[in-house]
Image 1 (cartoon, helix red, strand yellow):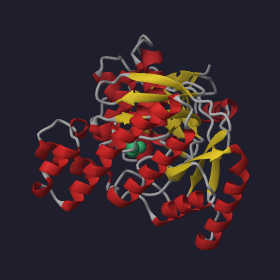
Image 2 (tube, protein in one colour):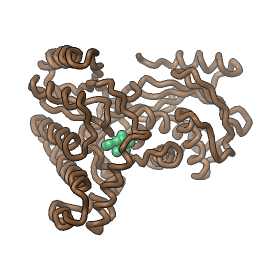
Image 3 (cartoon, protein in one colour):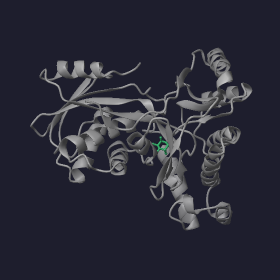
Image 4 (cartoon, helix red, strand yellow):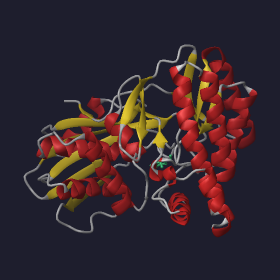
Length: 381
Ligand code: GAF
């Protein structure tokens, strides 16, 4: 479903006083490579997608936020001055962003809002970061001077996840949603915050997501456990994050850490080098190497980091059988999509085979999503 401005406007008018406000949007993201590296101070390589969240917002002259979720047909009212906030997760994202923007000194006031999205939920394409970035950008524009830098807005979304949702995520998703640029991927050094745009126009290749439709949700998942493992290993080595570890340092503490933590750190250190190898390969137009690294990431995420599931491993095997250049789990894992780098000539064969074989085994077709790299958070009108 493509989300239109008219859809949002119609519902806003219907649910509030018949007047209109301003419309803002922010996207979900894909990630070519660099998974579970952000909270370890490593590199990530995401891009914003065209799917995202859209919100119409209008100040209402009170201290109350009146919010209507178009997708869930759910309404809530909450005070900006209430410490606790609403209980439903979809409203807590908005509440958290309001509170974090206020903590930055932005004089947020009450508003009416209707919001909706077309990022497939549970696909690991970061609908939650899209929602956070949309509101962070909008509140800065409406109540601040509109000049808060985008990394600060991304951090507002990340802090919302940590403090109001309970997911100790890294910065990748909110970063991508705030900084996205059409036809560009971005390599972010999560330790320094420096990033570069990489034009993404692979001649003869397509990026395609295959959504297993196994619902991925980081809330209540073992995501935080993975992060804790990494932090334990970093502590044992005596470095701030695994970014400052290497194979020798890891081997030196092998006897002091659990076998499980060892495997987690082994994946993270390997992924650091894989992202760098992919950047080098992309500069030479060497997509074979890019693809090979994607398969290696999948292997690591499945066997060592253990965030895959049977369905995603199966989709990865189908990609190999179809001679797809690269394929791997994308995002936090525990369900969601694989991301596939496919030669254009093989695209049709791969999609048809993936659908047929998956259906034969699991009784339903996976959903194919063609990736189009889009822009980051913005005001629409
Ligand atoms: C999720 C998190 F939100 C990101 O910060 C990142 O850790 C990702 O999982 C894994 O790379 O999307």
